[in-house]
Length: 382
Image (cartoon, rainbow, N blue to C red; front, side, top):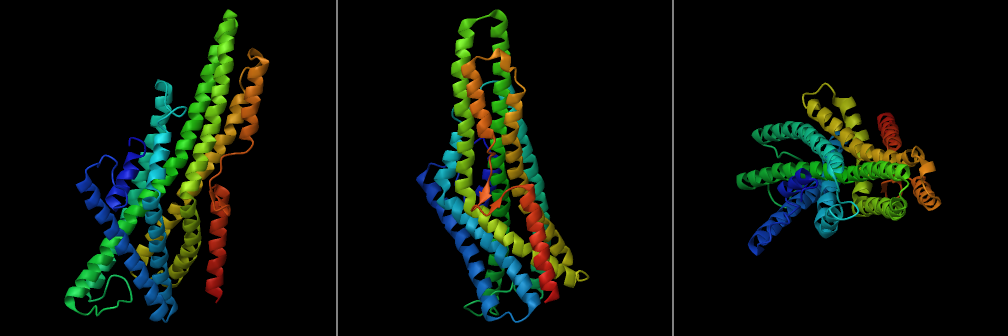
């Protein structure tokens, strides 16, 4: 897969995406076993942390720190499970972009696609570095806990963790699980936003085709070529289909990843307010630096979704302005009707929603921050 190759590579490293080229039955079986082990490790960590909160935790500080980790891992489990279950749908989504009318036709369209691919790759690397910084701090803290004789993270275990062998096995399992969780998280955020930005790329390609078509129409008008004018009519109907296909692609992306949007937004609101609350109470402690980086990462994580969704809204509504600026007097009546059909469609922008509750946009991001701040004030007063 050439499209979003770096993001799929992250998934492969994270253990939830077997490369399509691995057709050998032996490789399939080995990677499927690897995927099962990764998922079981994550689920085990979630279960033991949840039981620790229910059975052992008896103060607000422990509850806050454990809840942050628990919600993060729960979100990762949901993301990993959905990607594994909907693997074929994601593959078909990528293949869709390689077929007509999405298929690139000339050097200009290749340049547009390359611009978006480069941007997606660039911010994926930057976001990976941010998460790696956070993971490094958490890992150092985990190692210090192990040196002092404690498990990296508080959990309830059905066996005695004081036995040296079980202690080391559990410690390694927790650290490795967190590493895989981070890779899966980064891969999911960058992959989904990459798919959303592919919508923007297709819209820009569509606009480029409209400009070129008008240039051809102008040339035909100057030459008074009836044949070229008739050809233009059929091309306009093709452009209407392309425009509708872009909306169909965006709808498919939303259907596939809609559960992730819901889980991410729900968990982010809770995590943001609790992490800020915890920092306000323990800002002077030595471990607060890790929480600061973690909180910044959560702000960036949810912003990536909202920013990419907002870009899709702006791009889809800009098509009407581009059409309005065309030379309408050069067009026939049927061609004008075709353009009007496209303009009417652009009055309903492309939106990516979280179970129809939240639309990915800058406004939603502001609302999340306000909600988190309100919840923070409530916690502080109580």
